[in-house]
Length: 370
Image (cartoon, rainbow, N blue to C red; front, side):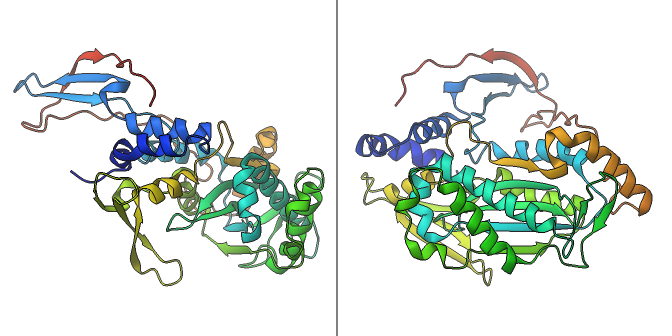
């Protein structure tokens, strides 16, 4: 059986919680409990039976926690289906704003505040520059998602935005196309992003904790084309629902019976050359590094701005119609969304291949929290 994150949590989670009881956030405890119980008898489920050969199978409920690697594929497909209605027949860009390394410790200690400021400063910077007639001269639409990790699970907060290549004029009708293969100048976005973030931070008590050199260095902003609307959504979806580590990246766990000496090895690809590498950590370090990416309870990691904002949907529909009449849609789904209903999947018997039928439900098993 392939190694899973849930198994690592079940082996060492109790020892980790006991050792780090004073430092663990409530969101960390909740996520660990959910992942440990996911698709086990603790959450209940159903019993299916094959009427042809009598084979019986148990299917336990998923935890549905957004940090669980076993629960994200279905949510990704649901999100992709529902987002069809937002597509514009236009090229798209991926705009990324990264928090400087000097602010990461502060961000981890004050996650909700700093993550909110990261969204606020980056979206405001992009909208302000896009409104300049030298660049676009209108209101842009942005779908943003918070991402907090590198490929080897290091803490690295940044925000990705999916942005159509153009903007809406103040009259709410005229569409200004962005320049060919260019959206906004990142060299101008960087100081603007930094200034707005600093101004917002001045309204808190945290500004004095920031090293002064942070305000004179370049803040990393990146922008690249990502194809049409359909391709762009598929590109962004993994950023939205991907958890810090998928089960398929887990290679092995060498169990010594002790959390600090047991070792967990996982794979990752380097961002510069795409080479496959392995990282080996103690079980304690591995759990700690994963938990760094658990978001605060009820934190909204996907946000909509400009004409993508929920309050602007009437404007968005009119814009879709207008652009569709001016140019051929880049994808047939751009102006004709697919049905939001998801296909139902039959459960087939692993022995004879015939459909299995629900025999009875399994109630959740009462148990104490670890």
